[in-house]
Image 1 (cartoon, rainbow, N blue to C red):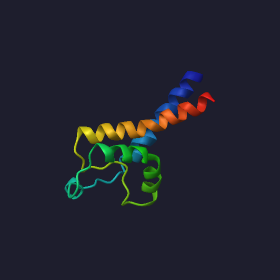
Image 2: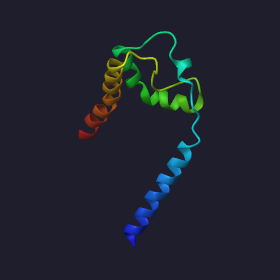
Image 3: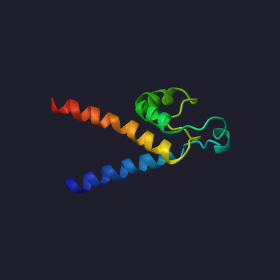
Length: 96
């Protein structure tokens, strides 16, 4: 009975997630690909401020977490390293 309840709760959670995702709006990519391209350093910065950007994006449609107009792999690497810094900081605090 416990397994059935967990499976039911998991399937309901997935259903709610898919339902909410289906309501998402699509942003035209051509509007985002103008101007400056962001590289490794900006990827690090954007990755590091991800939690702040996420909270701001909930209240303001002009704020995004990830820069679409980036230089490719180097920006992705910087973003990954910057956002993973939060995990290292949390790990250091939990040992004390």
